[in-house]
Image (tube, rainbow, N blue to C red; front, side):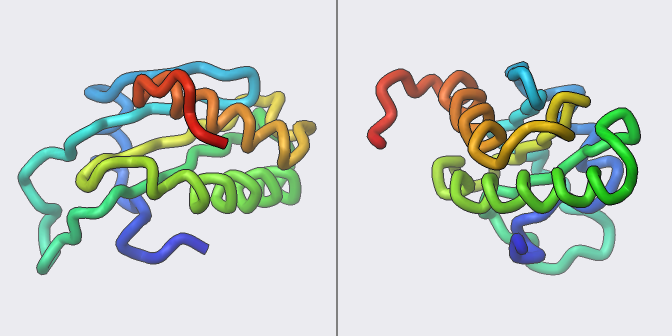
Length: 127
């Protein structure tokens, strides 16, 4: 599970990342990355933390509810490992493609790492 301060929750947060951020497509997912979130905190937020945040979009095209929840859990675990690579104040939205429903956890991790390498401009990332 991602900590509460590391999650995107509201629709305007997702919309800002998808519309204003950079995009990297992979076979099982599309990553939307916004290196610096807008300075306006959401209404009612007190002390908005500055660390990186992530959100997930897993639609019905991925599969039934069992498959969608499985994909979300796998993506959440993969993002938890990669989140320290993101700078403070960055937002990431991971949108699963239908191929993610049949992909293994290892494939999802590889696609996530490759997409982040492209977005962050890291070519020779240490293993």
